[in-house]
Amino acid sequence: MTTSATSDRGGTGAAASDGIRLDRRFRIFQSAVLSSDLADGVYRVAVPLLALQLTHSALAISAVGVAMRMPWLLVTLPAGVVVDRYHPHRVMRAASWLRMPLVLLLGVAAFTHHLSVWALALGAFAVGAAGTVVDIAAQSLVPRLVNGAALPHANASLQSVQTVMAQFLGPALGGVVAALGAGGGIGSAAVLYVVTLLVLGGLRVPGDGPAAETRGGSPKSVLADLREGLGHFRRRRDLLHLAAVTACVNLAYAAAITILPLWAIAPGRLGLPSWAYGVLLAAPAVGGVLSGRFAAKALTRFGGGGVLRVCAPLVGVCYMALAIPHVAVAAVALTVSGALLMAINVMSVTYRQSSIPPELFGRVNAAYRWIIWGVLPLGSLVAGVLADGLGAPSVFLCTGALALATVLLRAPRLTEDVATATPEASPATPSGS
Image 1 (cartoon, rainbow, N blue to C red):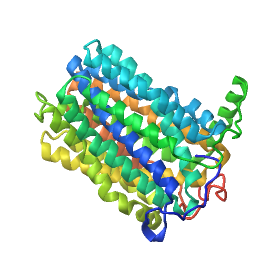
Image 2 (image 1 turned 120 degrees about the horizontal axis):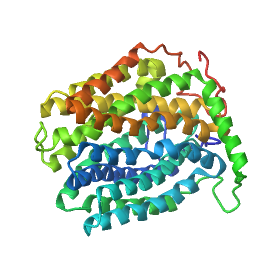
Image 3 (image 1 turned 90 degrees about the vertical axis):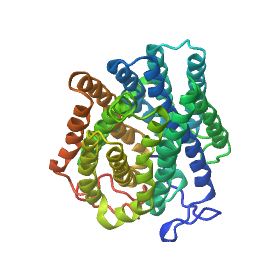
């Protein structure tokens, strides 16, 4: 994701598994991710609940879901060029500064009852655009803070924190705060984004200073940079396959999460109050946290291909199980899906960080994420159409079957030892690809 990985592993970092230690700079960065993802978790629950207060139209609610996720289609690729041209730490801070007042403005509009569902959709798109840049820059920053051998453990630690914040504490807090009044959840997210900015201000990363070089350039050179990154991605069969499988899983996820409020919150079939819906959404985080400590070991033992072949189809089974109108079944299905997604995430992030050339990482990684996250608005749109025409259970059954069908895809071998590879030493195309 970035130009070079650091090899500073000393300091006061807490011990990771297998004796690998993560240093103080990484822990500061992880703290920034913690507050940002807690805010994301609150925000992503508060916005659909707020949309549900404004309208009960399945198509209108799905439109808000599309707006939240559309930036991954429109902003991801340019963000990759920016991250390759400028230091990802500075890009992350600048985008965070932009995102915070946008969220605050949405909260004020909701609190004063001057917010329509379409204004909510527009605001959700703007916040999502800033958040997309933050996310691309953050993932590009990790190899600058951690050396190649520690990448699986750093990613497992980071993914565990993100899971707890964005899927466990964030949704639970978002459901509770949103139940107290319009705009409460969004306002709470704005406060947490301020904390993120304060923590990022205390992070010092090599190469990030007044004298740091940037590539700059004209629009023409920007397009040339983008073509270079896309060309490398197109030649990588391993990354193309990984993107295709993950995109199917993400489409099923987006469809399920978009329509889940109508299915779960009374008068939906599960009959839950809004605060309990936030708790239900925390179930994937429970599974993710439980499996996070084993994800790096599973990757080392079974390899990236083994993890992907087993976990992706099983995620589809979990989403199909959501069609059963029982709270306990939904909770178990979401918990197991969270555990499987954690293993996929750790494998995917580590594989990309250790196999993509450093000078191309921002653009190639952005191309990859453009595909896997670009399907999210499509999933939300599909959910609205299916639910409006055939009912909510059809959303879970159809999109879950799509993720299950990935077992039929013929995969190239992902044979590179991602536990020991460094970005500097990684080949442009891993063996077996």
